[in-house]
Length: 171
Image (tube, rainbow, N blue to C red; front, side):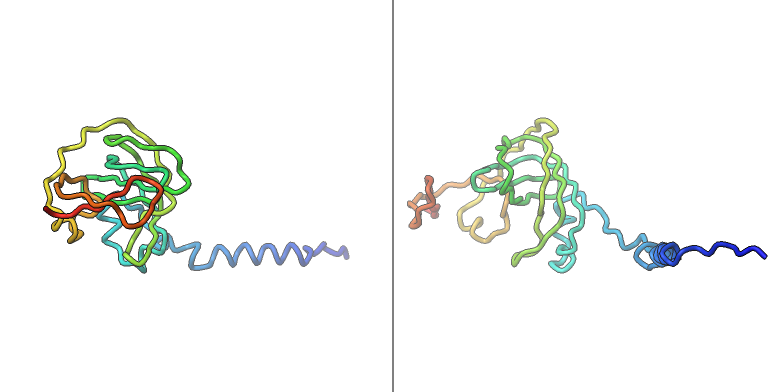
């Protein structure tokens, strides 16, 4: 009789690895994929532990304020405003620009954050007139990241930030 050729041991190993990866729970469990978050409120409804899982984010928002030198961007969507750390992005966005923010969730001591942003300008939008708030109301933090109008007394900052800096007080 003729001897039938046997597959090499390397070939058998590759076949076993292929089947084991196809049968693993991660490969067959599509629920392990994280849902994409589409609003600021979706992002901030997560716990810090959930936010640290890097959920994908896709926001359609309006620019409220941008300062690339300080890596600062404030945007607002239909559910509320948020801060985005833009260190490493040199573009200055204009107030009223409509942008798409693609990012992932992160977490810091204050809770969920918008991390690793990629920002695309989509056009212009009318920014509504800001609400009038007192300095005391702003100190409470309820309007954090919001565009507001306020009045008060300016005092120079006690620390040199290498730019014009004032603190605002009631009165």
